[in-house]
Length: 233
Image (cartoon, rainbow, N blue to C red; front, top):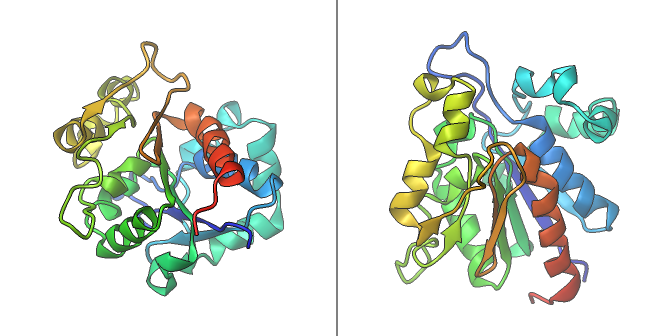
């Protein structure tokens, strides 16, 4: 049976001030989705609440969009999936061999405390599957524990959106916490690229994390190699 991938995105659309819009960082979902879909693996897109997914308007600025993101943004079928996303409450983690958490600042509000995210992530990992995330997506892993009580990241090296990158885009005062600090408190170690906003991916114990939007395709490519090479069931 073809291995199945679950992509989870945020449902949270505002920063500390409601006038500051956020949500999913579009390219982070698109570049991962494109790698997996083109290779023929089924991939479902779900959000925490279901329905219309908020997209960070900055991620749609022409200067930040490449040909791939432009193509998907103009694709009615793909946009319909984001406008009518499935709800996480309707998902059974036992049906998937990989979970992917796309980023965007919205994830800092709704990913960490979601019991459903923790349940699905633990189920997939303990079934021998992959747990993958990019940029702010690893916020989903901050409180995830396995059935024996062990923290998912206890002995795992990870990466994610770094403090310096947060400061360089002047978003630090608008967010509830710095992801790098929180990941350092639960993971074995946190590694980041020497140069901000360059692709950087860490793979450790079937957990694949990417540092920033520039890392999304590389996370997809590493994920694809595992999906093609290993049988998880």
